[in-house]
Image 1: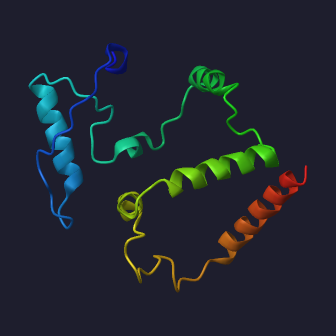
Image 2: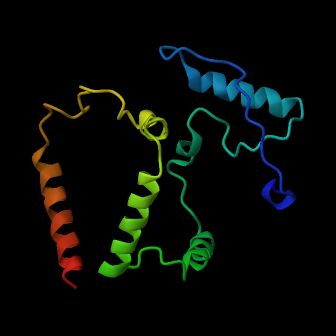
Length: 149
């Protein structure tokens, strides 16, 4: 039975810290296999070392896709929002952000790299290929065509 259905939460514990230059993925896989072998009730779906990337190349069946589609219907996912609705969302986000102290803001932004001044974006100085530029152009044209109605 799922933890949420039992009103339980998983316990997260750091059992090993692997330096960045070492292979953390194989260590994660080893620990997951170890705890499964001793009968621990783990929440891990994948064997580790990549999270959801372990599903690369996996094709969902039409039944699963239909179930996902049905679950998302009526939730407003992918539905364009009116300008008034978008303004309300923006105002709510501004109010939420205004209530935060500077320490809280840094805690929120630090994991995203915003606490580092002078950080160079990873694509700075790299040239975009003609094929990529063409794809980006087509994508933008489709986006703006859909915006106009």
